[in-house]
Image (cartoon, rainbow, N blue to C red; front, side, top):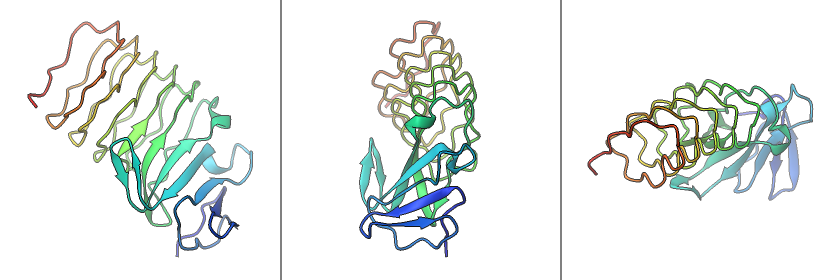
Length: 204
């Protein structure tokens, strides 16, 4: 049986009950959440996760899976770890490092095979991004306002939506190859004033 990970506490919303690290997860329900057990910097990786039985996040449909964020109180840290890939044997499908404004280098995401979207909006000093995992389908606003980013990461062939992905990336000088399956490029490079060339746009 899956147990609550070290550094976290799980809240069963319907039962109004908490479960400490190391205890067995109860049956998951919509709206349950996992949060750091304390304000200690060694606890919980600064992440908070929400469980959904049915939920749409942009174009990502989540059925019995998790979304996660860096808690706003920890947005001024310089480094972070990657999200969990699963929690209680259910996939983590969405994660956002929104407004982590001192993070220069993003964590390695190679183990996050369940992600369908990953976001770094407002990470104003971010200069490098790791390989985005295959399986990600939606990069809506993923790098919005990343004003220190000079080069774009490789976009996986699984991606279909690049809506406002690099919106306001004013230092971006080079563009990535656009996968053939992309169908939405609304505002992809809006405000990217340092670009010297445009990408090849897929025929569809």
